[in-house]
Length: 244
Image (tube, rainbow, N blue to C red; front, side, top):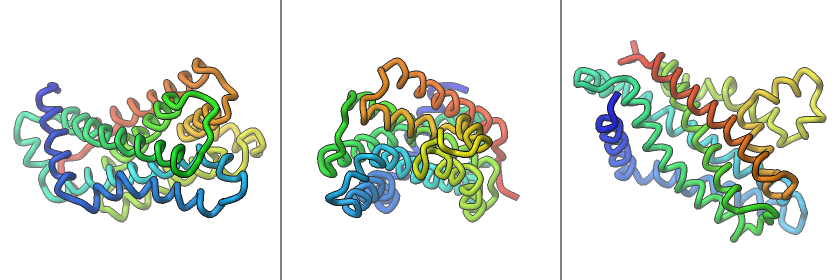
């Protein structure tokens, strides 16, 4: 694995996405629109102040998972990956290049979503806005990493969607959006404590209400980072050149 090949892969991916307005809109605009819709639904109530941080975690995470997994899988199904691997390009170069490309998009996506939630939808933040941004970026990167992991195992776009009930939906249900994690049944609470989206939601909520210090927030980001690195490593090891 070399940096030149990794950055070359990232540049190629960004160029492809730049020429696809629908994907650009899905990545950069849709999460903010969904956050705005939730804020609109709960106009004149205190509900958005409670669930708003979780929405910042949820929508970018889902969008990054879908776009990353389907885009990577399409490279394999089209034979592009097979042709790339005939050149001096390793699996690590490919996966890390994709992670860098979509990671950069995740930063822009998060900047737009956080700005929209705070300055347009009126989400009040008691803690540091920069910490909120840092957690939100790590959450979007988590969606990217899990998307890369799913694409390594899926054979079709439909199978990628089938991975959502396994990798995404349990995290949404147990992440503290519908019920605080400490009020879940004992077994489910134990499972929730190991899910990365739970750490993101807890950290974003803590920044919003100012209930925890920066050190506590950073510890949550480190756990999310460990999940990101682990997903990328496993994805690079299990990636197949083409889909049978």
